[in-house]
Image (cartoon, rainbow, N blue to C red; front, side, top):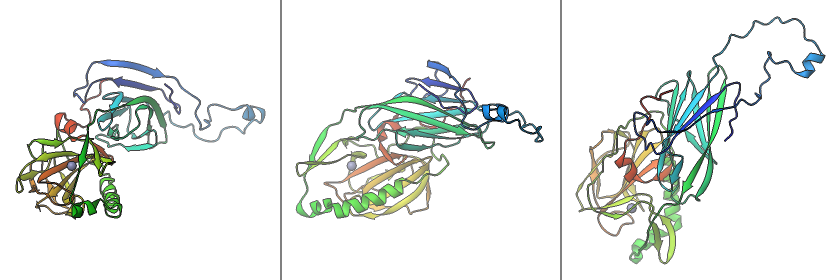
Length: 339
Ligand SMILES: [Zn+2]
């Protein structure tokens, strides 16, 4: 483990298996003070050899006020992520800071619940290659102090089933990449928004309590070819059953789509969005604020669908994540981070 630090000492604390438990679990698996490396920015207090050889005129500038060195503490709810699952990153600085995170080439925007805190949920893509990744956390103050640290995060293979789907000729036409690609690009844009607020609280509400006909991550085989994986959970029900918002948020899409049918997408803030597809009727409109458990539409079988059901999905920083985990446990910033 190595940290790149500009004039500060960092503490990294990894809490293993805390599963977003709040208040923070006392199971501190590893606590480490990372050593300082030379700053990239030359500091006046540290003359270089060149400066020693060429004496500078007597100092005329006012000595810089002593800044409290920036220190950051990072807690991960787990240091490993199974494909499609989410872990949480909590950052605490000793002074106001802005933080961001990077996992390999994936940039993770962080939400600030307080001026010296940052939080993000990080989901592993359902098809992510298992193996070790480097998580890099950076923090900066308004005065320009910067601190960063890296920690290993391992991506684990999930256990998923495969399912064969067949459609009649007309429905199968919707598999035309010209249709599905355009819709997927549109949805990636919808799910790619980031709002620096947190509108939800606690575990997500199931939008419909019914029999699960297809779990998240299931590999989808159409016409003998693995086309994709299942980005959500399919819940069985009758046309007309009431579909509820899984959490408070702002409706950002409410319209008929060719593949997803009548669709609703809700932005819950901090990079978390939820989608509800194949509705018979949409009962909300874009821009509307909805509460957890509020009715947003009726179950149906519109779009690429073989019968009445709800497809429910949750996106975390644009990545489709298993909604079941979000319904099982509360996600969000830790209330307190103990020193
Ligand atoms: Zn589905």
